[in-house]
Image (cartoon, helix red, strand yellow):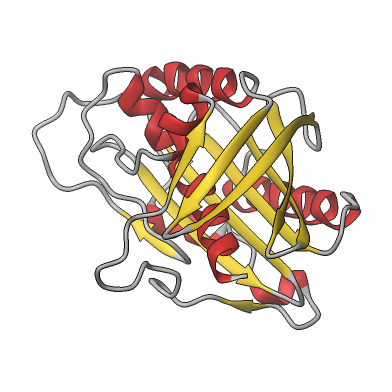
Amino acid sequence: MTRLQRAGTAAATVMIAGALLLTGCNSLTNASPSRVVQSAPEQSVAPRTEDLPTSAELEAALLNADDLGGTFTESPPGSDSPTTGASEPSFTGCRLLADLLNTSDGDPEQKQASATFEGAGISVSETLTALPATLMDPAYTVARKALSSCGSISYVSANERIDFELTPIHFGGPDSIGVRMDGAYLGTQVNGYLLIERLGKNVVMGYVFFQAAGGSSQVASAYYRLAIATARESLGLNG
């Protein structure tokens, strides 16, 4: 599941960051796999009247392995990075979504935390990103448009390629959007889910679930709803 984990983590961690770049914002921070806490570098920026969650608060709002139960373990940072000399994996096909997923830069005011977990044939990735509303609004609009624009996309790594058929899926509230991803890897059916949901004016969650040799959305939906509830409770966004 290592290559699939990388595909899932990449999708979850760069969705909003890529949208920021496409909407013309500066790109200075870099999202990376597994549990990551990002703080923007110090810069001279115009003061904001709104308070954002801190990186530590975002990290505390993520799921952990105990939340998922069973045999899940958290993947260490960098565990799915490409080997030396290997080409960087990328998404191809539907250009709007592929461009978004292949972008790894964000805005200097961005705060972000992410985690990836591996279970028995299952990979779960969650990312929480905080931005001022003036930046979040256009970024989220672009991300929603990209997710709804494609019927297929491919993930290419080294000499391997996974072709995914995309179907709209809805697990969360009215501010969520997502796709189901169906393909095959080394002759095995692969089923995945890529979703984003805005939890407030400043926070968005990215979620990716992959499973091998399975096609039911029941487990993916359950973990998604748990992630949403945990983040809302921890960040005080239930109102």
